[in-house]
Length: 300
Length: 300
Image (spheres, rainbow over the protein chains, first blue to last red):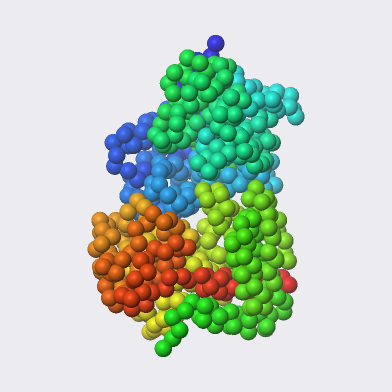
């Protein structure tokens, strides 16, 4: 039986990254930019820095004011010694965060949250650069972390026969349809064959084979039907998912910093992951290596 | 005395556009995309279409579902017969609207609301294409409409000696710091010499010469100091600006579809514009012509 723990799996990915880094001509360097003086945020930033060190990468953690961040991104975009940029969001907590996210050069976007990579995903374009089949596109780190966790836990197999879709016949409900996590995740899981019900505060959409359609399904219906339930609502006002709403063999994953499941779900669901934290950083490491190989290795 | 009416000024701009179009080898064509079946929204869309017709442009108004819009934008981006794209926002009312806004090719972005143009503005880069001094950058249509209205009303002069800034010594308060209207407007007016207090729901920022800085100024202090007050809060919950909060010679402009000023402000302010509507469309016309000249005229 596999460890039901994101940290164990994250460490496996970090080990694999370290081996890969050992074979490179130089240590890829990532710049982390944090615009916060809040102690827990800084502690989190230093912990992510340590993960990058563990994998053998350089990681320069720079503290800036929120109003200096725009300029810091532009400088890092132009600095050839920096191969990846990682920003600790939220900054302003509004539309300006998307502006900043899209300001990061796609060739240094470790989180793969900028429009360049989102667009590749929605267009089902698997290559980083048009016409070059050797360079794979990046996937956004949090959705990727969730999919790798589910795969590792045996919820579905990634490696099956060509043309088959490992989530065929499965139903998934996701509470969150942000452009950075919820919508990419709905697209990715529906591309794997699942029917995905995607909820945000304005209501549901249904995704089949990466295509959204309108639906009037209720939260209750969607939860009762679902094999996999994923929550990411950054609010204490979200009514927690309760054991009575879900089926006993369902898999439950929360990626919000708030608990979006009632803790008693742990005793009812077949698998319950209340946090995915370390896996997201592991996927950022993976993306940092891919960026280095795609865009920076030749110029060094 | 000049007409205190956005419609009169808008008509002057439309007349000027018509003269310019008459000298072109073809009629520039704009595609309007509306994802609404709401009667007032459709009536508004047909009214904007008529403004484009009045100026001598072609304007194809296409009704799509919100889930078809992404594909419609991609098709229009690739269609050489379409020179400009105009989208009736809001669509989803969330982050996905920014994704769609940024999906429009910058060479067809009539509203100039995509990141390409915003970035040019924030970088004070006045040219549409790097290295080509003949092609002027576009400015976002609503901020531009407000500035043209203020200029027309004599609040400040656009044409003054080189190096002078026409709003030097003026204080401006703007309620709205969206990436599409409020922040560009703060940057533009502070670039003209004003000190701008920019408020959103998270608090104020101060802009001087296009640079933001932190401030603890209150709404009351900012309003009392301001020569120009501009509101654009899309909510009935915003406490309306009252005559008691403003000085008697102030200029008040509302661009929200809600009344953000108490109507009695009309009797206290030196100028009160409760709506700017037709000027925004006039600026879109101006942008459509500039796009045609910058990116499409040579290929026809």
